[in-house]
Length: 185
Image (cartoon, rainbow, N blue to C red; front, side):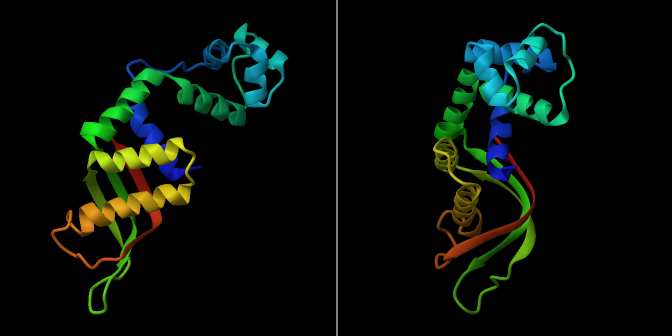
């Protein structure tokens, strides 16, 4: 499970104008249409082509939990691509992104400052440039660690340094022990 990647996806999915298919047969039919055939869907979901055909024909309706999760993830990843792209574009150019987190945050700073790590609950509106960097990194397949570093860098500049108005000598923000993380556009 990718906390940051899934969080970014969930924020974008809130922009959907229609709900994604809920039942397994409907999800399977949607994927068959998107991938133009049952063979491609079967390979992607790691099931037999015959199994896919039986879902499409409503002969099977209830998948195993692991297949149900893969099915839902693949449908949501492909659902309303134009709406998804518009939501990302808006966040990256005008809207920005809000990060709501409860995590252990601390920083590296000169001696004599209170740089102790502690659990903090922050809700911070990040400007569009940070949304753009997060979405770009996600699209390029960045690791969970890299997405976490980008979020920490954004929190350092926006929250801790107040966009250059304080804590100018702050070197690095540590973002660990994440209890809660949610993004909103």
